[in-house]
Amino acid sequence: MNEDFAVESLAGDVFQLGNNSYRIRRIERGVVRVEDAHGMSPTIPFWLGEAPGRSDELSQSVSRLRGAIEARLEDGANDERIGAWLAKEAGVVEPAARQLAEYLTASHAALGCLPTQETIVLERFFDEAGGMQLVIHSPYGSRLNRAWGLALRKRFCRKFNFELQAAATEDNIVLSLTTAHSFELGEAARYLHSASVRSLLIQALLDAPMFAVRWRWAAGVALALPRRRGGKKVPPQLSRMEAEDLIGAIFPDQLACAENLVGEREIPDHPLVRQTIADCLNDAMDIAGLEHLLARLEAGEIRVVARDLTEPSPLALEVLAAKPYAYLDDAPSKSAARRP
Image (cartoon, rainbow, N blue to C red; front, side):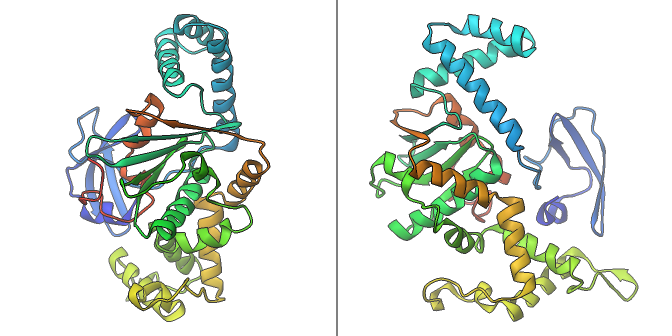
């Protein structure tokens, strides 16, 4: 559970996790005790924490299913026939099969294809406020999409000198742009290169919330931070302050004023820093998978489809309405920079 979420919550608050709701009974040092709320409506808008990303095997299965449905759509099948096929072959209950068929049929009609691991779709449209939204449909799972989104966000920042809001889910990446950003849509898939994306992503993750969290984990496991003091467990708030003091001593550029930094941050050769960066690259994200994906894009093994639309496709709605855990930047969830 995210520390800010735990500290700022109150006893009696109800939050939803999955299909269940839970009521907070009390908040102790390092522990939040909850009870089943028996379906009560949440009193706080979301549960904020970190969950494991979708496995590669499941992502491949999602891609194969989309490919099979796309083949049937191109053969002239309608959503009723596809729903019946899903219910029969995939063992999906009939109402869910019908809804899934309608959802993917409408998405195919909007995009002209269905995104798979062999076909990446770039979708661009303007929202009601006049902002430009770039959605990358990439069914590779959140670990790879988080890496791709962070690296792209950094590349856009350097190219246009403009901070972007970004989010990533299991199937999509969204970059919230402005009318000042003008570029060929299909070229966005080639803004990153497999040979240089690692160093770019390392610079990007230093500003992401994941770095501070994993820094505390690495420092705590290495016993560089005291767990107990005076016979009592160190409260999370004090532990966070001590972790910040530690990184200031080891990695001063991380806390330095941005106006005084020239070029990229110089990363010290320290075991805690190396471990934190490795955890971010390989646990929170999938840098090896991203490098392989970019290499396949460069070799022309993956088809790139670009679509400029007047309104978001059904597949884009998931990431546009994503919960705060999908954000790749550290702006507050209630900030004016966030999409409504």
